[in-house]
Image (cartoon, rainbow over all chains, first blue to last red; front, side):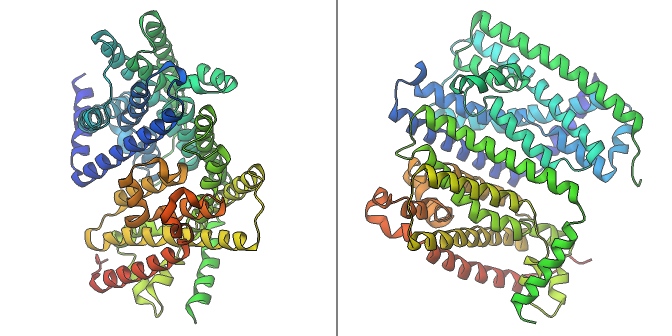
Length: 263
Length: 266
């Protein structure tokens, strides 16, 4: 466990080094929040009574999607793919820790960094500048935190699986683009699932992707509460377990066949 | 050899080099197509739920998106690697362009091609065809001519903007994040009509980062919505002029950058 945290801490330090990047990222997140508010505001001016949600809730939903994106997606696939392509993966395998656990620790560190240093401050600014809302009560806030953690686990394992593809193809860029697009669509990150046409909505509700954004965000704005919130958490936990299992299995297969180029 | 035939020869070489990796080609094209279809569907869901977006119907939004991506496709096909200028500078490989008896700019710009621009182009054409028929447009030669000019202007605007931002790396060694930020502004303009944003943003994308001239302003002319911007109507025709001004500006920045360049060694 101590080893686990030392990797987590290291990832945190690596990210602190780039200060200018930090400021540019901050501006970039605020800009994204601004565009989200502009779109919803325009749409709501046309139809103020749409879907029983207030404009405030809707803007909060959209900005939250942005804020979550700033830290929940730690890009484990890029790390794995780069290590594989350059052959540096051998140094990861030499470490006295299971690769899957190592990756999980590392990405958890990056996630916590992203949350503490990027998402929370920008969200606080957004709270004052764009009039964002807070969760309805402390209980909902707690469930939201739990739900974000489960969402991270789902996202991480999907990324881990995608990264493992690099062992077969070396370059995952084009697959990753399609994957990101599909995630941002079916996870409800930008547009909540209840606005989807029926057919697409049915697909989105089966896929694990809603566990990453839609579920935590619905708990936050209060459309999921009580039993609905708990069963949504169960859905997330189930998918996190399934994907973790599949990821370990896939890694086991890959590891057995692995040959590292160069050295 | 004159610069244009030199450029064409370089592009031929770059294409040959690219064709070494054909498997990449197919997955890459599919990736770009999926990404764009998903993006446009998301906007489509929103706009159709609410009927229109500040007076822009779904097909007008598709038109904006397609016009942008047509200009962008030529950039992405032939000039995408401008964004990687910092790698050439940091690794010292930029020196190869300075050591040869030809324009460093032509040598650099002809260094690579990026086949994914083909997918962008295909998406742009399909979107444009769909929008044209669904909006029941009937253009005369003036509109068609202006469309071609607007697309070329879009390419030049994106290229000069990227060249100037990437040139920051001549001084600082880094420009990637700054490029991403500008790209983010650019994508906002691609997806949404500029008039849904506040005055600050509209001024930003009209003057400092003039990406609104890639699609929004020319679209006002091509869709007969010039009255949307009232007394500012000349902007709807201004894309080609803006593009030429940007070319002049970028040429100046490039000269300045080369003059103070000192190699990273190697």
